[in-house]
Image (cartoon, rainbow, N blue to C red; front, side, top):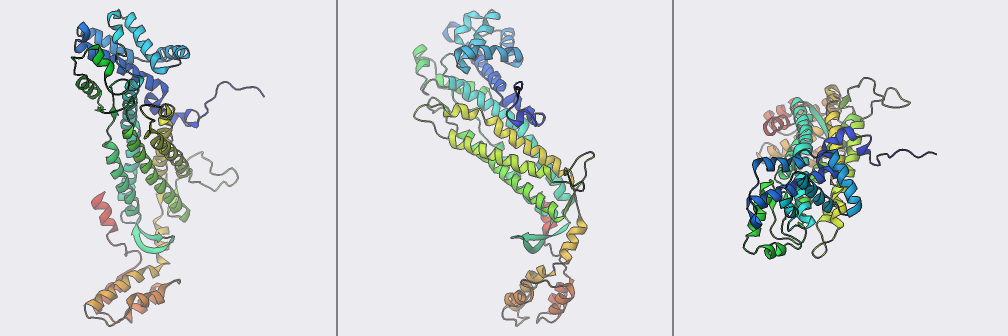
Length: 460
């Protein structure tokens, strides 16, 4: 067999590239290198703004020309870095050489030695990862998650009054409404979103072992921690003053655990919707030209939700690995984090793909209210809970002498179907007050959904 031209190994870079490509602006190798150039350039500007080592603040024009190095970062820079890294075998050093080269082109050789001044690679990397992850989460991933939540919220309100048989342990149980059940996921996801929105994106900028030793050797009069704090915060990040050679990655561990948590809730949603479809509660809206089965033309498979489940599992596995690995670094530094962090985009990519499928899938289903009502109508035994609870209240009020209401209803309903007429006859014969008896006789499975609609409309 002939060899193919270079092919994408990951489906995120092949089959699903169109869905996840917005993440590539941040969580790709090119996105990381652009952020590294940004950090290097802004550090030069910060040093000259403080007139360190006899420099003078750069003119506005020179600052604009310097910032253009990352604002216009493109294929030429990507190729330049690839060629240089093949020689240096060090990605951050290649970025340093790129900045020095461009300084020379701009006629700014006099400040070339400020490039990467006092920095260890992790100073550049910790800020670059914080910038790229923050921008990817806030600009791409969270909006996709919110889009799913908003679609769910709309469905919850639309179906807030649609009574539905519950199935605790898979068995018929006290009715609810479809809207309230979808609303539970909205409530859960919004809580996690608030936690993710509160993420601190930390960076360190304190040299080889977090002590500013080289900085003090160069100029012991400068308040280097204060300068570093101002610099890190100028990038919109949170300063971590106490570290080893690396920023400790705890903020990443927290973020990935929360992203995994959100994925777990979404997985629960996908499996529940899949089950509702299998029960006939939701009908899938046919998509013109789509094929459900290669041999059974009648089928519309719930592929959106199955795809979401699988990709959430993959994302969750990678998020778990990221969190477990990044929480530890041997002594002052080891490189296990380096290759691990290169998979951040893979984790968010599979998660984003799942979100896209969920959003689309939720827009391709229609509630079959007649099926829900038919299901309720053959499960009158679920009113056993209401009857025994009313009887207990009547006993307490002195209007009944029934000794064990629960046992009475258990004998009537457990393990067997009870119809409307049979249940009505049973209620009429109960030793309870007339008002309570009429209240029970008016109940149907479809009206026994408590505050489900009100909860949905009040809290969502």
